[in-house]
Length: 329
Image 1 (cartoon, one colour):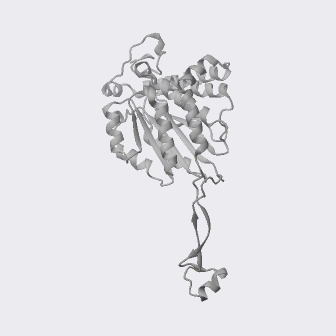
Image 2 (cartoon, helix red, strand yellow):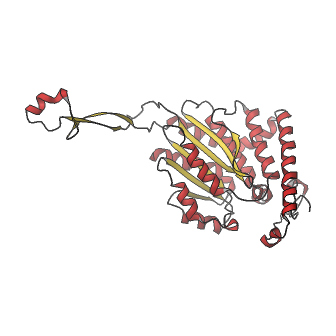
Image 3 (cartoon, rainbow, N blue to C red):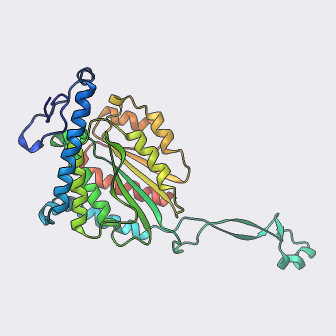
């Protein structure tokens, strides 16, 4: 058993820059690997990941590397910042609504009632904020990016992991300075779990050096994580977690490379999860996958699944969906 592209039972994926062909063994071959070999491979992969993360933690900021991710999305960063700045408060405040036809008698309207006026009651209700009203609570955003092994494995074919990292950079750059309006977190999902921590709500990256480390951790995880899929669990956890604290509004954006059929995941299950909490605006972006991605998106509730055939368009597609979703809420 060896590491590398197509290495049966191997603990991780070799560097794609070394010229390895992309290969994927069949489910039958995967099932033929002993439990002992799989456990040993998982442990070797975990140790390799920890070593790589330690190297990232000690490395110095490389501006050229960061610029390679930022440069393709600089225009989208500027456009997204305009959108983020312009989004208005949504949360409805509970207050006394006056001039009601029923409810509790309004003492200030007793004379009007004696004169025959019918709208002399008041009741507690939710009043939408006035246009331009300041937000009293931040909006909560949860970004769930695919950093599974297939993202690394097929990056040489369509640059899907590159685009995913560019999207992460776009998000981090665009949200800088908006901490008063947006509370956000960024996690990954893979065969290693549904919520690999990358950016915590309370600790957004303070500068580009910290943002580069986030991207480097995404790459490292995709290379060394065990195979598998946590898309359903990632969506379910994100929808529940984002609404855990009171906020002005709630958003979940999940990225998947649409390899769901291989893991026998039904789109109906995913759709139920995305719409399980009416307060949460949850969306999934399918990259790659071809007809499979289109089939999945069509089976989801309208507007909840977005297919991005060209991964180069992923950052722009996210920007457009976020702008549209924010204007509807």
